[in-house]
Image (cartoon, rainbow, N blue to C red):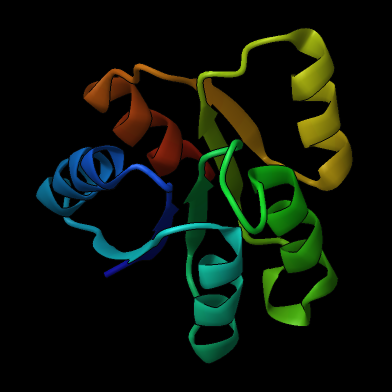
Length: 120
């Protein structure tokens, strides 16, 4: 079973993402912000990271950069799920090492479809 780290400072968004992904057969670990996610990523490996962009302590781009420096996460798919939709932000995401960019609100079927495409 593939494991996914779902990172969002909004409890309701974490629950929605978690519900969608566990329903599709994934094991989901939740993190409340980038710092919490990075700490959890030190303790276990994840097949995919799904992170919000705007969060306290460490944002999604900061998390992506830090994970890309870690040997276990050099090639792990990292998807940013956010309300940010500007081309400038998407380019910053790519520069940080993000695999993809999804805009909230998300379509659960589309989210699962994208994850199935990028997960190994």
